Image (cartoon, rainbow, N blue to C red; front, side):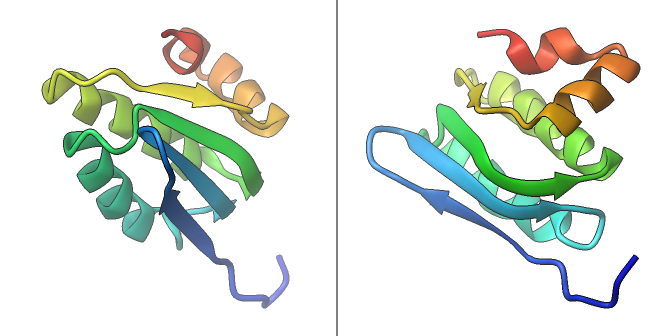
Length: 103
């Protein structure tokens, strides 16, 4: 692994949409968890676009599953768009792919 600083951002957009940009890695998901959780609970992130995700590890998959749990607990709908192939593969290997593609 190189020594580059890994970054990620959660951005709310119009129409209850949000977008994640950057790298979903154990060093970035903690900040994303809070930002995404707040947006989901406040009805500002019913759809999260993942087209800006450049790389991910298993903590990125855990983050997406946690957001689904938060949405369910708050009685909010949540759907992911443009899920990167790498995350699909991790989800398939972990037998949780149906969680990410439901909705």
